[in-house]
Structure formats: structure tokens, C-alpha cells
Image (cartoon, rainbow, N blue to C red; front, side):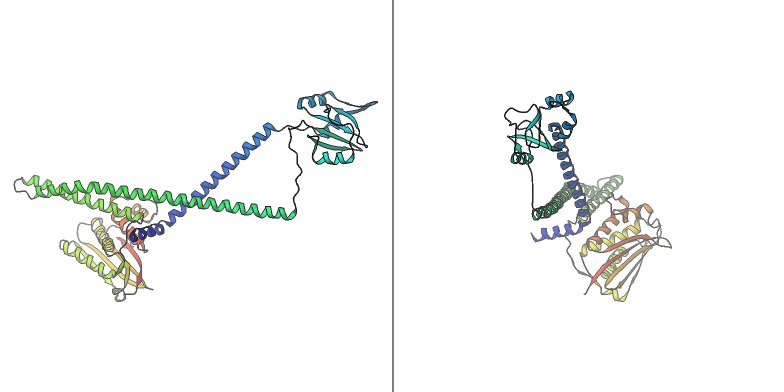
Length: 420
């Protein structure tokens, strides 16, 4: 259980930049979706309002359509037809509140109103009829609609209440914003974690399934290679099969390690190690295994860097320097002696290791892919360098690849030292 928690902590730490990008995109996506839904709701409400709203005939228009005559007033034909079409009515009150003119006025309404009646109908309803009023000199034009066709209500709030509403709306906006961010964060965390863990498990499963039949192939190929009953050509072919099987096994191991380092699923068994000791032991093993005149390694380790320690996984650090030396030997572009120079020094409790060769150097495409942070599929020729890069970054170090002024490629590693 403790080991699982440790791996998860490494995962969160190493995936922070990419996770932050996903979180920001998720925030904007959720916010955009929320805005779109709100806009759709508002537009739908507006459409419903337009389709259901009844256009009110205002008192000013009625007054303009009235013409005084000897025995009262007459309304022009167009306005009268509009009253019938919209099922509305109107009446004109004089200074004493008496009805001096009306059109389609309901029979249940009175013909005279006092000041209290006029005050009530100006704010509310008149016998259940929604009305609007317009003063005209000393007269009042009252235009009404049928019952249950218009909602009318006067709203008044105190200033302290409005201040409270203002603060509440601001708090409501902030709460919604925090909710959107939190939702995007949870969604992004779960999505990225599940996706990348599924990828790790898939790669591990495929590698395990391949490893078993590959071991069988290697075993039979080794048996055939050393079988005295087979002709020399057949045994040579069996040796080729065994060698290529070893190459495939190493590629599978590299694939597993690369994916685990990429998603920080590799549990680092950190301890205090001396980089000088590791580099020297790896160099000695290469010199012992190489043909005389094939490899030359020049070690230049400053005295203050000899005893410098770093917190690292010893096995992975051995892998780093083996890959770097092996890459210089394979891709130096030279068939004769390959010269490798290793320098190590200390500055301000930091360990610097520079490994360079006298080969043709790195191409611009290889340097671009090594310096890029994108998930480009590494080519076979830089798979080992990709593993080096990921191991150093998993240890919190820095690494830089480049070409020297006098030719050849170099790799500069920076690690934080600890007291021995």
C-alpha cells in the first residue's frame, strides 16, 4: 500500500504541467458549455415571450384616434378594429371620474369612479381586469385587457435589500465559477489518470504476453546454434535468430521503462550514490568488453566531485551512462577508434557531468526531438537517449544535448548533490 501511494505522488508531481493544461482547457470547456446552455435558455425564453406576448394598445394612441364631436367622442375605424382584434377595451374618465366615452367596456364595470378607485386601478387591477392609464389634460384614458391575460404587479424594495441582492449575486457568480473550476479539475484528473494508467497496463500486458513466446524462441535458437548435428549454415542462422530475439527483448524492456518513466509509474529506489563511482565502473566494463583499438575513454573527474553524492536509483543511473556510451559507439559514424571524454565537476552543491565523443554529432532532427516536450514517437536511433532524458528528469535533474564546436555530440547532465 505504501509503495502504491508513493507512485501516485510521483505521478501527480511529474504530470503537473500537462495536467494543468488539461485543467485549463476543461475549465474553458465547461464554462463555454455553461454559457451556451444559458444562452440557449435565454433565447428560448425570448422566443416564447415573443410568441405569447400580447401587444398592448396604449392610451396615447387611443387619444390620438379620438375625435371630439358634439355629443362626445368618436373613434376612427382602424383603431376600433384593432380593439376588436386584440380583444381589448377602453374608457375615458373626466375630471370627476365619470365615464364620458368607452369602447367595448365590460358591462360589469361602473360608469363613475372616485379618487380611491383611480388610485387602486393605477397600481393593480380594475375588478380583475389588467389596465393601463394615461392622463390627458384633466381626463384619464383607461385601456384594459380581458381577465387572466396579463400579470401586473408593482414591485418595491428597500435600498438595504438591493445592496444585499447585489452582494448575493456577486457571491453566486463566484460560487458558480469555483464550481466550474472544481468540476473541470476533477474531470481532468480522473480522465488523465485513467487514460494513462490504462495505457501503462496495456503496454505491460502486451510486453508480458510477448516475453513468454520470445523466451521459447531464444531457447530453441540457442539449442540449434550449439547442435553438432546441424550444418554450419543452419547453426549460423540459429545464431542470427537468437541475436535478433535478444534485440527484441531489449526493445520490449526499453518500451516498458520508457512508458513507466513517461507517466511516472516507475518506483524510484533512491539512495545515496556517487556518480563518479558509477561512471567509472560503467566505463571500465565497456573497455573490458571492447576490442583493443575500438574504444578510448578519457575520464576527467575533479577532486571535489569524487566524493559528491546524489539521491538516485543506482540501477537506472547505470542505465543512463551505458546508453550514452553505447550511443556514441553505435552512431559515431566511425569504424576505427571511438574517443569518448567524460568530465565531472561540482559547483554550488550541484554535480555536472559532460560526456562527449569525436563522432559526427547529432542531426538537427535528433536534437529537435530530444529538446521537444511533445510526445513524438522516438525513432529507433534515439530510443536510448529518450530513456536517458526521462531517467534524469525523473530524478529532478536537467539534461541538454548538443554538438561541440570541433565536432562530435555532447550530453550535459546537472544533478543536485547531497552531503555524503
